[in-house]
Length: 539
Image (cartoon, rainbow, N blue to C red; front, side, top):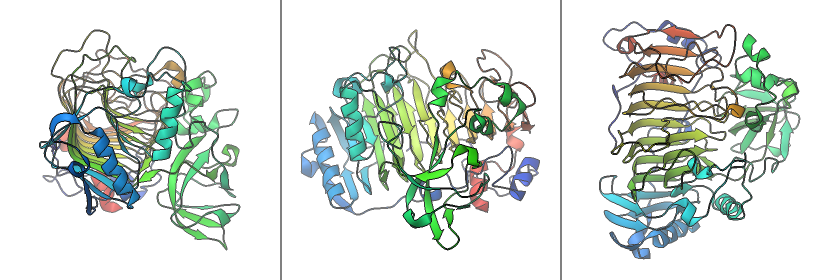
């Protein structure tokens, strides 16, 4: 599996007698409402559970016709085995040691199904075809000649079966779909109940108009719509003065991302007092002007995973920027409480994609080979996910002219995601416009060589409560890592001394940003070492 990043022990214990960070002491006093540091202590599978389920083995792909010598296409056999496990209500599908040629997408569309190899060094799926070949060209719903395979879809695709069928049918019909939580259109939902009283960021319990449609354990969307003054977008930016002067109306890609949709689970319902308690604290304030409500969503895939596999893609030159053919790795789409563990992707256009994903964990993952556009991509309203013990390896061939490299990407109003214990031999902390907010990158070493992306119509690079904590920058490049002068209400804690060169990130907001910087130039001195692990310890 992938080697852990530097200082992999993490944790909140004493580290060589290092003094505790003043910002950490502040956070401990008010963990759910700190102005600069988001509460991410429940990010990841089932609220950050350390151990994934070991489901009983119900199928072996060889019994369905897969051959481990690479001689024939094993994709139909693997997909038959997955479907058989899904029809049984779940279980583990074994992919024993060997190399299996796959000429099609591997589809995990059922709950509680685990595709398990013998280890990323022992089980290989050798993929021969791109998503363009398998499904068809995928244009952008925002126009232009871009290929949406540059940021969507995977040769291993964890997505509800019905949702994936509707997506691929729409792509084949060239009716470019919305990729998120409500279906191919933004309005495919109905209201379950509206909030009856304002609520604050950090509240776990809210008062609703009518709780009769809600039950304990329900998975629902918490939805906030913007008003004519764009006060919701300003709130996501921390309500800094510069957000009032910022021109929001022409950011058409950004405004298409609202209503903001945050999937959450109902923990309890007090019908007498009309009080509903959630599994995580509210990500934002809920003001009446934003019509806060709980709505339906597409039925997500839950409890499924991929383990112990290398996805080795036939080596092709990296495509020009935004024209990817879709030699993509693992995509998790409308996936909730799913996981990927000990998985390497090699020679991919895009490595691991979180697309409208919730509370998923990627652990011990690696992106290797000829270089990729988005090694790690987190977009389209993805929330509360955890990427830990990850490696982005140095590319094996030079980058062709006209290509782009990002790194660990987050965009599209995605929030409360964590990247922890990583080693990045290239790339950058790509915050890709679309105003992601309240995300954490912690205990990472990076050779900061990539560039951020994002269309100007997608709006700001950063919303509020972004935190970079214990980051070693091996080449002293500041861009996208030192964010105290660009991200509102952010925290830059324990990063290497860096300098400006080759920068393309500039502040979106004028005036005071209310950001904090601490232990600058001394990542080795910051305590706790890992912000996520420390938050887990107080949870």
